[in-house]
Length: 273
Image (cartoon, rainbow, N blue to C red; front, side, top):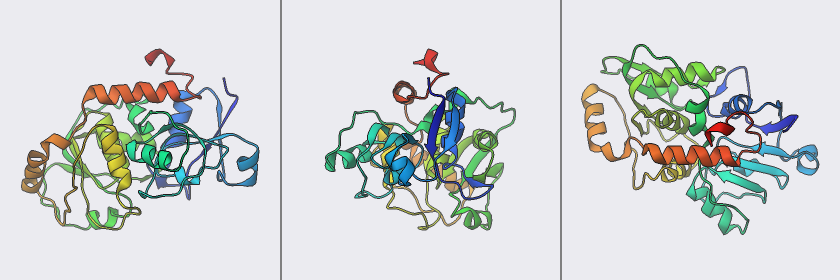
């Protein structure tokens, strides 16, 4: 198929936000092509001449008229988006925003992180009771809290190793996360998980969370704000929010198929769709 696949993702250092570097990881796993990093979709060369992809994360606002969007989404409800080719977007809120702006779009929803179980199957021999997955802006807050917990782990999403981080999430029986991709990865691997807040420090207006949750048909959820965490608090949390902890498997499977069917650089997972 493609000799080269040009992709945009945020990358700032030798360690990056887990969600930001999912794009090249997924692309390398499903494509036979060489992956080329795009400096920015609005750079003259890419805006005018080279077709390129905008995929995982709330980066749809970076897309130019020469971009191809596969799985990206908005971070603000009224975010401006340029006209592009939209193959799939993260969820219905991004879809609605694109329609409001008068652009053409099909009805394929899904965050590409949902296909991770088709790509990587971690071997897990020992489980922790609970995994706490803070967004990188919350990590120090959580790491410094006196946690009254038995048998737990805190997952650091500042990483250069996708598979190690996925495994760190998958060793848990349950997950709480203030990171969108901490939540999505847990759900993708069938782990009960809840979106929680440890601060108000995240960028955006929470649209990205609702965008994802509604894509997997989880509605009317309000995240609890946690100042401390204990076994009792978590037991109550998962009991009270039991209707929100895991999307139905058939919904996730359907999204996986739609994403693979719409991905032009998917060379390796054709037998699954």
